[in-house]
Image 1 (cartoon, rainbow, N blue to C red):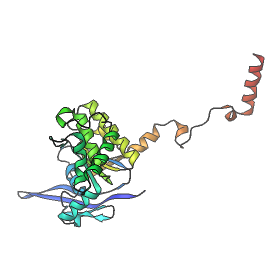
Image 2: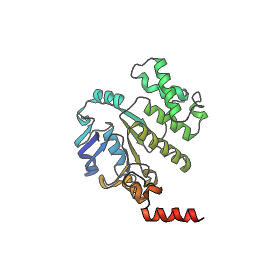
Image 3: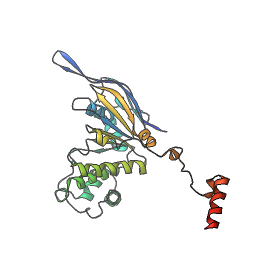
Image 4: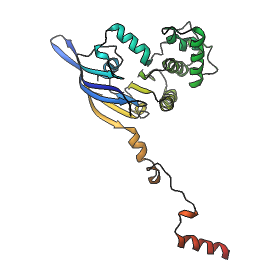
Length: 268
C-alpha cells in the first residue's frame, strides 16, 4: 500500500506560566492511500492540535510530518499554502459556506485559487454536487438548505480540488444524529470509491466506527489503535473470511448423500 502520511516523534509544547503543557507528546503513526482514519479524544486531548500539524496549520516543537514524501514541518508559509492548495481538502464543523454564493459557486470557489476558468470550475462543481446527491440544490443559497445539505456542499467543495488527503474537523458536530449518520456514510463511500485518504477528528466513538482505523488520543499520546476492518472480517460467516462463499449446490455434496437424494426423488 502507498504510504501517504508519516508522523515521527511529534511533539507540541506550550508554556503556560511556569509550567509546560504537552499538547502532543511523542506521536508516531502511518496512514495509507484510500484509508479512512478517525482521531478520537475528549476536549484537550490533543486531537485538534494533531490535525493542525498534519494540515501544516501549526508548526511542531519537535518531530516530522511527511506527506507524500514532503517534510511539511520544514516548509515556509508560502510553501505550506501551495502544498495545501495542491494536495488537501478541508471539511469543517461549521460548514464555512459563503452566504452570498449558491451551492454551485461555493463548491467551485477553491478552483479559482488555481486559476481555472469559470466554465471549468462550474463544470467540476456540478459533477461534485451530483456525487453528493444534491442535484436539485445547485442554485440554492446556504440559508435555503438544511445543515445536512450544507455539509454535503462542504464535502463536495473538499473533493472538487481532487485532493490526495481530506481533513475533517468534527464534520458532524452541528448536525443531528440521523443526519450525522447520513454524512458519515457519504464520506465513507467516497473514500472507498475514489481511494482518498481521509483524516477525521471527532469526540464521538460511534461515528468513529465508520473509519478503517481509529486512533485514540489522551493527553497528547496515542494510547490505542483500533482496526475496524478486522472487526468486519470477524463478523463475516466463516466461509466468507477467505473472500469466497461456499457454493451450496449438488456438486458440493458427497457422492453417497447425492445418490441417496436422487433415489428419494425417484421414489416420490
